[in-house]
Length: 408
Ligand code: AMP
Ligand code: MG
Image 1: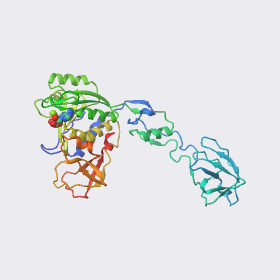
Image 2 (image 1 turned 90 degrees about the horizontal axis):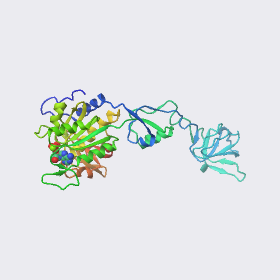
Image 3 (image 1 turned 90 degrees about the vertical axis):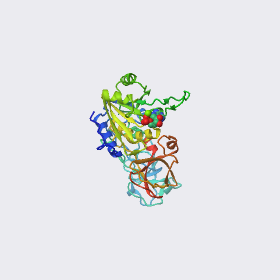
Image 4 (image 1 turned 180 degrees about the horizontal axis):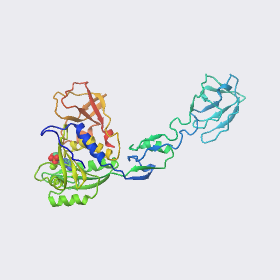
C-alpha cells in the first residue's frame, strides 16, 4: 500500500475531491481480481468481471412490432390482398407468397419477402377474407430489424459494470445462464468507544446504543460485500491487537469512532505499531476526521463516529472506494441541481451535506443537522450539497444526491 498522504499544511482541510481521489487511487492499487461464476439470478449487486460480448444478433431475425398484416409493399396497389398464412410468435413462417399478405402477431418472425407490417387497426378484412389497408404504408414500418438491439461480437456490458435487475435481464436476453463476477469484498466492521453497548442490553449511565454497527453491516450487505461483524473493540491494547489478528485476511477494516490521538485510542496505537495510519481533516460536514491506513497490509478506513458523519463519509468516500476495488468506474452518485427551499446565510469552510428532501421540487432540510442526529437521515430523501464558501437564497441552485443513489 502506498503512503496515504496528509493535507499540505497543519490545519488545512482536505477538499472532498482530494480525499476521494486518494481513496480511489488506493483502491486501484489493491484491485480485487478473484472471480466466481454465478447463476444469473444470483448476480444482483455484483460486479461483472469480463466484458459481456453478444453471441447473438438481437433480435435474431426481423420481427413484427404489431398485431397486423405483413406484406411486400410493392404488392399493395389498392387491390385487396388474400391472407396466405398466419404467423404467431414462436413460429417459423414460410416465405411470403407474392401478391398475398400474412396475418402476423407481435414478436412473430416477419416472413422472407415481406418488407412492411401494417397494424390491424388500419386493415379491413372483407367478407371474402381479403384485406384492404386504409392508410398509406412505408417500407420497414412496424418491423424490428435483426440486430436492432445488438449484433454478434458487440460488447453489451463492459467489465466493471454493477449488475442489477436490468443488466440481469439484458444478459438473459443474450442467453447467458451464468456470469463471471468479482468475488465479494470482505469487510470487517469495527465499532470503537467505551460508551457503546449493543441494543437489547439495559442502558447504563453514560452509555449509548451502537447504531453504526448495524447501519454499516446492512449497508455493506446491500453493496454485495461479505461482512465480518467484529463488534465493539475492547478498550485495551493487547485485546485490540488480538482482535485485529483474528480478523485475518479481509479486504478492508472499516471502523467508526475515535481513531485519533486520545489516550484510550488503542486501535490507533495498534495500527501505528503494526501498520500505518494517517489522519485526514476533511472539508466535509458532517464528518471532518477520517483515518486511512493499513494493519499488516490490510487497508483500514476509519470513519468518524457520529452516526450522521458515518453515513455521509461512507456514502461519499468509503462506498466509492469499495466499488473501485472491484473495478467499477462509475462510483460517484448522480447529483441533481435543484432550487433551494431554504436560506443559507453563513458560508462555511467545509462542504455541507445536509439531510434534506424535495418538496414541490425544492430542497428542504431537516430542522436539526447535528452530526449526532441520525433521525435527520431517516427523514431525508437525499443529501443537499452546499459548497464551501457559499451562501444560498431561496431558489438558488443546490446539489441534491438522492439517498437511493448511494444506499445500494
Ligand atoms: P468519536 O469519533 O469516537 O469521537 O465519536 C463521536 C461521537 O459519535 C460520540 O458522541 C460517540 O459517542 C458517537 N459514536 C461513536 N461510535 C458510535 C457508534 N458505533 N454508534 C453510535 N454513536 C457512536
Ligand atoms: Mg469514541
